[in-house]
Length: 303
Image (cartoon, rainbow, N blue to C red; front, side):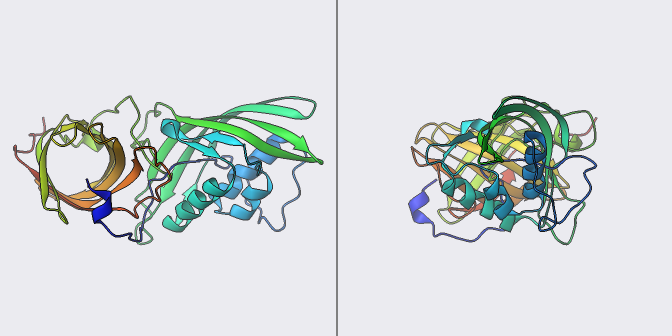
């Protein structure tokens, strides 16, 4: 994949460098402009996750550290230093979705004087198709972090998030991304929504007419014959196939989204970068190209 050969392009959906902070299950909706100022670390954290779900960057900014050396880690180890890069990614994420739901499923908070720390589990649910809100991507996450009381206000000064094993249910979880930004977890789920993605696939990058072969297992994970490449599927729902790619040969990685044909023989969509060498601040979906996948082996027969 040659980043320099493609022009920047807008994107419609983001599977981003994900800072993913979400609102409490059952929390009554209160417009941010009328909400009371939180007076303790737990209510401040809940306000933050509510603001994330409401795509309210101004409120998030109010309760997050702007220290130039503040550090936060999102899934797959991506690191933010300071506020500006994080804010840019959050704006991209908010612009790419039509709705967010981020219920907290578990939260424990401890504090000692002007310092508090927490452990939290939440679901990050993103809707990107305004015509069909039944289509959604779910990231099941765990968060830890530290808040500090400054001038009477609690501020989130450090945070770390990672994916967790999905609970039983009908939703297929996705692991990376941020933006949202979206990369596969080490543990693969069961066959995505009952669709077996195994077999050999001829993958064509349309703009360069570059072709290589991917050999995937039922979960849509496996190597491909270009620069030591590896595909990992993070989500498959109603033929919308999303995942990540990584190339050790030229030290690059990114993500993709394709739509599988009804007969399961081909898929069309796009790919993009999230990292090239040491450069890991690439805006999602702005550098990449088009994909055409064709099965070289017959689709597996359902049992």
